[in-house]
Amino acid sequence: MLLAICSLKGSPGATTLAAALGARWPAGQNPILVEADPAGGDLMARFRLADAPSLVTLAVAARRSTELGLLARHTQRLPGGLRAVIGPVGAEQSRSALSVLAFGGLSTLRRAADQPDTTVIADCGRVDPDSPALPIIRDSDAMLLVARPHDDELAHVALKLREVQRWSRRPCFVLIGDGYPTRAVSQALRIPVLGRVPRDDKGAAVLCGHSNSRHSPVKSRLGEAAARIAILALAHRHAGNRDGTGPPSARRKTVPGTPVSGATLQPLCSRTRNGADT
Image 1 (spheres, rainbow, N blue to C red):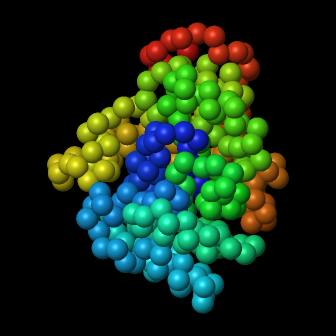
Image 2: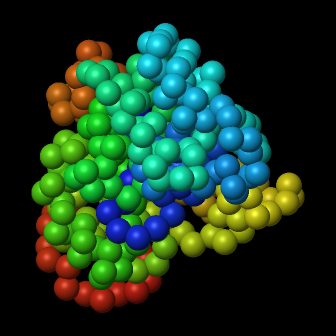
C-alpha cells in the first residue's frame, strides 16, 4: 500500500501524523516512512540522524536500479524502530530527489508498496499543482489531506477541493485538533473525514524527538488516534480496489474491506468549537 499524506496550507502536523501512523500501523505490515516533502525534511534534525542513507542516496541509486529492495536499503531506524527514508533539510535537494524518484511510469515508492505486507507512508508536505511530490500522490492508494478544522484552512481546502480530486479519486480528510465538529466538516465539504487527531503535546513530543523514553506513542492519545486512522486507511484502500477508483496497481486484485462513505451533506453554518462529532 502507498499512502500519501499532505496539506494545502500551513503546517498542520503532517510529519508528526505520518510518524504516528508508521509507529501504530497494524501488525503484519512492514511500514516505511518516506519524507517526500519538497520543502525539506524534519526527521534528520529532530532525531540527530546521519545525512545518509536518505532520500538523496535513494534517488541516486534509483537512476541505476529498479530492484524491489531498493527503498528498504536507504532507510534509517527512528527511535522505536520505525524505518524511514530521511529527507534532506534543503528544499533544492528535496525537489531534485523527488523529481528523480517520480520519473517514469511506475515510481520507486510504488514498486515497493506493491510488495506483499509492505506499506509506504509518504509525507508529501504542502502540495500545489507544481509539487514534485504530485506523481507520488497520483500513484497512491489513498491520500490523507491533513487540516485543522478552522475557517482559514477549511476555506483553502474548499477552494482547491475540485483540483485535489483530480490528484486522487479517493481523498480523505484527517482533522488535527479542536475546531468545527467532524461531521459538520464532512457534510459541508462533501469529503469523508477518516479521523481526528486530538491535541496531545506529550505524544507529539515523542515523535518530534523532544521527550524521554518514559513516554511512548503507543500509549498516547495521538498514538491511539493514529492506530484507528491506519485501520480505516486500509479499509479505504480496499474499497477503492473493489470499486475501481484506486490506482492501476491496486486494481489488479480484490481485498476484503469496509468502504468509507460520506455523510448527508449540509452547509457548514455553525461555529461550534469543541471538536465533537455532532
